[in-house]
Image (cartoon, rainbow, N blue to C red; front, side):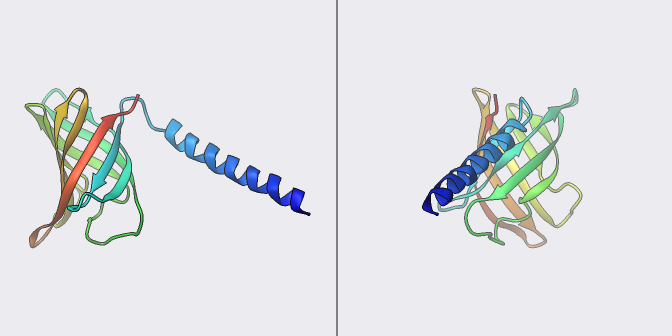
Length: 141
């Protein structure tokens, strides 16, 4: 009876490992691995996003983020999937993760260094900036 449980547990872990590696394999080439932190430097979001730069310096793309740890309501609508709109100016990008909304947005301001970006995310509501923290975005190879 104990011999059946051990191989079954091994199969479960192998399935979880394969499932996680398949998620990583589905990230498009050229996308950015995203990690966001709260103001206390605690990791709160991970995922990836794409950016397509047009000739007029506008940016479009998509994002796919998940929470780290407990779900929080103070980080704004940056969980799940969505579209990106923004622009690029002098090695910095300005992105809106919620372009279809006017009063419940997460903005990213990132500065380029060696093909990666670092900067700040900001959750903004009708009353203004509600929360913010740093992020890093590393180009996925």
